Length: 399
Image (cartoon, rainbow, N blue to C red; front, side, top):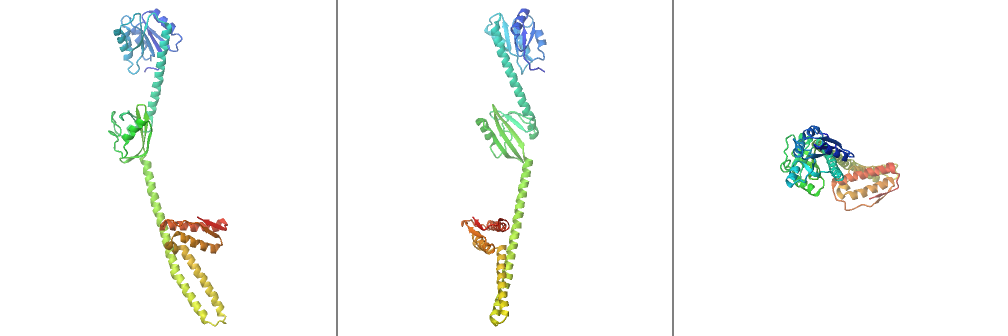
């Protein structure tokens, strides 16, 4: 495996030239590797990363062009930049031959050390930047590949060119490079996802879809723009969505149960209220009539008249209590005249019983809805009960 370190290769069959180049490059931070033939150079650079090669063109057995080709033949993804050393001005054919072999420049002998140093520093800096870029790309790819979230890379036309391991497991089938995302692959969405993908790439704006229904799954999809395309991440939220739907169904069932209980309780109150009003109320009214008849037909001087007066007063009080209890259970005025009238009546009764003044500021335009009015009336009743128990108030203002 080739190691990423800065090495400069010098190849020349003349030892003096090699020594001269070494002396010129002595202040360089790179490691200097030198050879006097092509064969020696190939053995020397095996398993080594070469930042720059300075190669003499005219050498016996293997010239500089052939050596440069062999060095780069073993480095398909890491071509070595070559500066050819020559004592002659090369013609166009020789220059083209050199560039095909990997040349980036030519230097004419004898060397100008300032020019040579300047060129070498430029190519070393380019090599350093290239290695940094490769390291960043390798890191980014490692993050992409090892990310537990399924991810797909597409180009500017939406064509798939890579995907990570998590995506392979998620899709549970082989993917094909070149397919157009959301057209040839994963196309059955209610939302036009291909249009959203193209819009993300064109506007350079992240697109976030927290909940997307796809076949029998629920997905959370995010599309983020890249330099030459986009990355699409997809999280399967089906399990959590099913829990959410189950909880929502349970909530609805509880609401229905609660409504049933409230309706049943109100129905029971209504029945009890009617029974008290119709049976007990009527019986007490009949008793009052009979007592009044007796009162009229007795001798005014009899001691029984005082007793009858007391009994009539007690019956009147009981009738009022029956009426109040019946009204509190289910006030007929609420059904007949609505919430505002029922609150006004209740406040009047409340003032008489407690001595607490009630000032009403009610909106007469409250929409008529029996269930809502009944709920608000029960809340109002409970509120005034709490006022009696805890507030120690002398006046109430009711909006």
